[in-house]
Image (cartoon, rainbow, N blue to C red; front, side, top):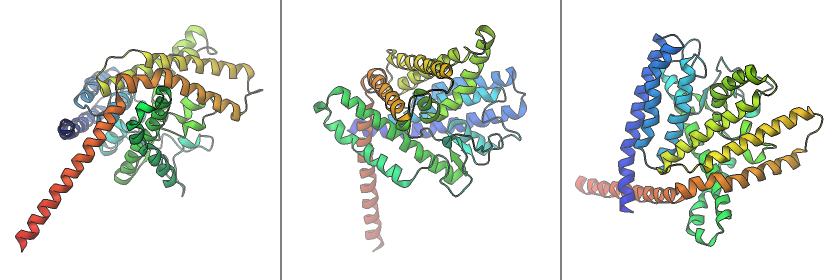
Length: 376
């Protein structure tokens, strides 16, 4: 336990140093955007920052600080910067975004209210709309929703203590629930901070994925929504345009879907490496390629029926979720829980953080008592 506390105490200054370097690097990118034209010149100027952002997460070793940081930097920030190099994506605005908004927008899943490039449309999916009414802001759900998920996540400690008595497959299923609720709670915290300090709306990562009615609904609208929006302009659209010239417009979406899932697989393998420092064994890649193939087949089946016939949502939804859970327990979660030992890491860090806060509290109490005695 002492080792974990020392590790945590060393991780906190590393975390602040990493994000100070992030702010400095993104300030440089903002200046580059003002001084260069979109294209090769801007790309060459930004590429060193992209490589630097792949390196920075290696300086963090905890799952609670290193995990989200690797996602924000290696994936979100880098993909947004690559789009920005060609005057695309959320960073390319007219007039240019101020540096105070450019920096958080580049590396966090947030979106400005009243973004002129993304006006609200009545036909948009609810999870994609900017809230400008008295309803809950975008990305913010009811307090009860978060309370329920927090209570569910809180049971993870007891499950970890009893895991030797739980069937491995059931344990992985429970871990999938904890992974989802934990991620949503962490991102909700980021949302709250962004809303308070920056006046921006959170770009939600999840829209109750267990309510998905198909694989297309699950991956496109409910799970990792920000990633889907980033992969679309960086991978899907370029591959679709190339494929259109090679195999025609009708079949062009298929290689574009597969390419998007392949890139997603590579990025997940990288983030899991950051978390566990273990080389990939490629089950994770197989998971995403399998889902890419199945989603491509689903899209073609829907095209073939042309909306004339479709399974009821009450049937297609459970089937889709059963497939996601079964393949997740088979291929996805073992990479995180077995290879990276994320459950053990999370428990050790939680315990170390608890002990660290107790020591801080005791230190404050002792010094407060000393000051009171000295004052007398």
